[in-house]
Image 1 (cartoon, protein in one colour):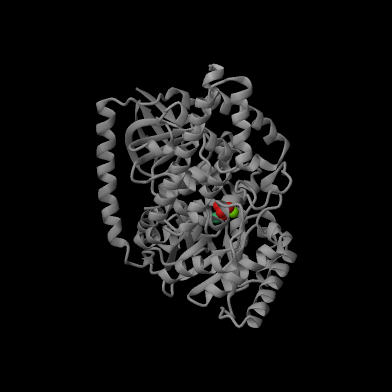
Image 2 (spheres, rainbow, N blue to C red):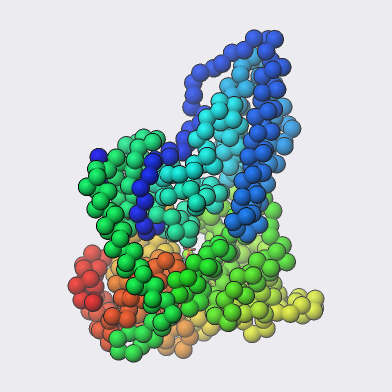
Length: 568
Ligand code: PEP
Ligand code: MG
């Protein structure tokens, strides 16, 4: 038995066989030579493997279409286009002929060369996906069956997963994830949470301790992985799981109830969603609305850009499921760790500090205008508000609002229905925005604090760097001060303020945020019941007193301990 400590990324327990995803399919060293007379046969075998790979990808597309919105299948259209690229495939055939090597050796040689090309041109952003296709071809040639699609039961263990891989995972078969890279706010972790699959990330080089086929037990609450657990360990987890299930059941009863503190203050708990299928999860856990609707999903898995009509229909479909519940849609937030193939600009050394969020939108105004038009049109069908990410200055807000006016003008001309009086808000996720929030408040209808980024930018730590996860401190006094300033300025200017970062999903911290004046919290749907349970047990007056006291503390841990001790 061996216990590995990682970072909890998605709650839940899972036990099963480790299914290691071989990252390095290209590491086999054997160079298989063939005879001249076998060259034609080998080329035939190569073509058969391409056909087989094509069929597999088509099958994935069909499967994804069955369980989710059609758009997700688009990622794999790129895979198909590579497989159908005659030029690329002829280059491999030539290697077989010229060097008289087996098809798998030729593919490997080709990939080694391609790797050099990656570093020289802009294919780099699609490197993972391109390698994935050639891995599939090799797997079919050497009949090795350790592709993700072949995992019918078990816990996926991998160094990293691309967003493409994450969305292709079949929830029916995968019981959990163990990923060596990442932190709780990396987008792979967010998707795991969205799909309600237990996950532990950031176990770093300890991944080597897990062998394919080992029995592993993962605890997504604590972030631990036990390799080959003893019966005692298994029993311990089973009883813990039973307790949690009981607790969940109890909390489930709370679903239809309002979130009211013990002294009568009403709090609103909203959900964050990033995929259309999460709407059901959000409703299941009793979300009163959507506090953050991330829209990157429409852009992430394709080479081209979504049209206005496509976006409009996708947003409308989600909005309609919520009746007249409020939905806050966030305009596209590319950059950072979210790359979009349709925009392969020059590589940025500090992508989180680069052309991200609103900066990108104001640079690519046509893309922005298209999205705004789609949002305004979808807004006609529900209670929709719009917000902009990554704001640092007032000028950005003014410019973005001009685009809204421009979109309205175009829609009027086109005689299309749209939400004329849409409320406009901004994310407060940079220290700059928090510090000038008094000024910014005069320009907008609401603030939504994006604590994931606010923590990253305040403490100058890369949110996806697991080596720095110890510094990812939501209750660092500097972060709390910025949140307090923002809340005070929102209240002073009579506009609404909510918080939609991951910290809202920690029950004790949620109470602290309420004490700081934030009465609307948005979180992963699965977190809503526990947060609600905590809030209704405590009084607003106490939360305010606690918040006042902790503002004098100077350590994250100290604050967390104080909250745990002083809240019921
Ligand atoms: C945040 O930064 O807190 C946030 C909610 O946005 P994202 O995680 O999408 O950057
Ligand atoms: Mg953010």
